[in-house]
Length: 451
Image 1 (cartoon, rainbow, N blue to C red):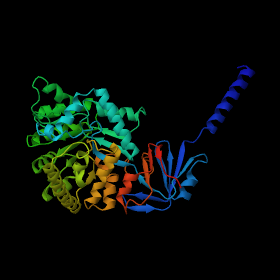
Image 2: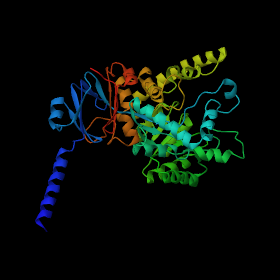
Image 3: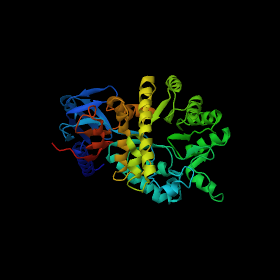
Image 4: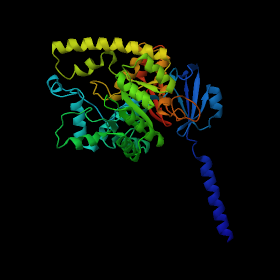
């Protein structure tokens, strides 16, 4: 090799080495007055978190963490704020935003409150629908929800495609565990459809369970769509054998099964079939809670309609008769009393539980994220201690999703998903509705904290 060539190669190697040395560290040091670990209940004051790339590298006192940080790390000082893990919505519907129809319209249809809005969503262009989902996802993230489990009503592939677009950085939103099409028995949700169109309409949104073989086939069809979880809606027509086949086939694919079950019969079917989580569970008995605890089945609480939610979303949009308004008020009171009792029974039972907003409704004056956080915080109003309420949307929810090794707490090795509030959420859970700082995957989504 010529001497001049050797000198040139040496120069190039030297320049390259210098460039590598000069490259920024891609590290962020976050300081705050407090850090609350919902899993343990411990509060660290003051606190710091070192983030490298999309991962938490170290958590501890500012002095300890700063000593491990690169000299050129970006520093974010949140002053007197309290740091928390990113929030998890364990049950949502990002591709639905139902406006409650007028009374006259609702009364003409079976399931008239929900079905008209669902039909309107199904007949929309899939492109338009997924763009709406992208807006809902962004609004969730901006409110501090960094992970969601989307449980149906997304068309054939709306939630899986939205999930992948977010993961690729093309749109902004939380991590999504997508369920694809919901598995149902014939006659659920939408009835009295035009026979010439019924099959096509249903295929856009659901997979029909019609026997054990069909149940396995439905799971495989969703697995082909690369879903993260299987969602089943249980009613009195669903047999234990059919649901057990779903569970067995899903577990073969390393997928968990979430079962919508509100009445006692459906809840028992889900328990007997070995579901991983039972969603809603409003009529669960104490004996069933004991069975769920013994089997390790999660209860996915959805306190959506607590605290007069139905009145809040209907009254701004439609004219209600005096009789209907009075009926809604009475229904709100009964629902509150029943849910208060449910929360106490759940806490007493020792069953595993997490929370989901079940948000699919248009809430006048609120973004999707604001509406979802309000619903999740209702557990505190229903008598759940603040720490348990926080666990239901962080560490407990992470375990229910099977992602406890990735999210749900601020620990080294987990995704850098953090939120911060100005006050103390243990003293006032409504602080969750005023999230001021959001980081997802090591990237700052918003920072409205000044000090």
